[in-house]
Length: 477
Ligand code: PA5
Image (cartoon, rainbow, N blue to C red; front, side, top):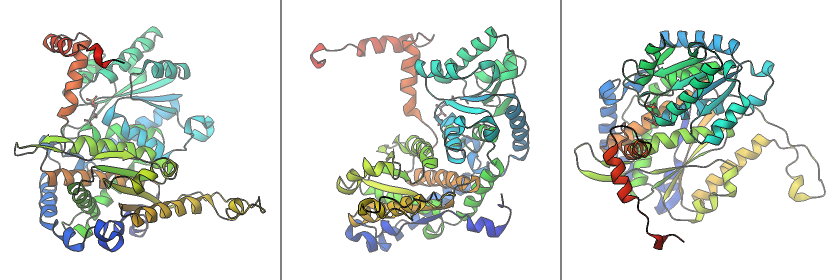
């Protein structure tokens, strides 16, 4: 890939168009220049906070340096990926949340949409699966299509204490042992360097090949470390291109001027929208390849900003509900609501300038004008027209929307998007004055699960659950 030349990088720059957020496009439903300018001081403070704390592990800001500090790790990952691609029929990620959504997203974004169905000579690498649930049916069905002895399992867990991932690991461990296969041959861990159970397991088993999920990198910010890079490299994705794209976007976000820093501009637009009661953030890629980028973004935005306390200890209930919507598919299901329902949403379009495949629409049905007009166009023209038409319809209806334009989808532009969203989230969290990088709200459910399954130390929690769990028949119909 030509990301080494300045000209090529410039031609691949992801740009933000927020015309449809403004008063000029939306009248009194849009933001005036004066209103946007009123965020300048707050935006500068957020920018300074992120800048000052870059790379600080204790604040979980290590992700900011991932585009720059992984040369050796990347070389190691590429060597391992080469072996895995040759040796195994399948590659299975066992992980959940931040340890799964990144690999799923990159797979879907940069591989053939029917990758696993391609013949081996076209795929060139192993079949790929990410198991991020403990639905027993899903595990059974996976085991129906893979041969564990010919599969490389990448167990990804920072803590090594996540019930879902460790359950999957126990099942695989048992299968490998029963098949007489050494765990060392078929398993790779991605985990914390020192803490955590996977480290202990690796030591007990005499050293499983392990990659480090760095201390200062939380799950949802981990796609650009070995969590995402190893699976991507196994798939043949250009991981150096991903990192170069992230670094390029970082370079575009070096100023506190809202109109010149795309990530800061997105954060300000979203915060301004939230302050006006736009509690729903719709992420709408017009690309099947980017469908799971929307999922990845939903976790990043929801887990980072959904908080009930500010950094100064004062209570709050902030955040915006992210919703995934796929263009054009969801034009036929959700767009009616977005156009005419409550004024509580802001829509982010992810729009491709080039799909890398035009797919001409042949002529035919010449006597049926409703169909004939399509002939002679391409599917690329059609999807782009529908994207423009939806943005127009939303704007006409006074609905806030903006577009991130992607020249074409490749590792470099995907890296830009990832870093833009991560920075946007960090800026937005700083503007809300919350801890963007923790997730205490997930803990209660985890503890209740431990209690229900009889984990030692959770006896009191079990009693609490038994008392609270009593059901009143009156409310069961
Ligand atoms: O973003 C996060 O921090 C979470 O989604 C975690 O990635 C998820 O809970 C899995 O945790 P672990 O990596 O410890 O297994």
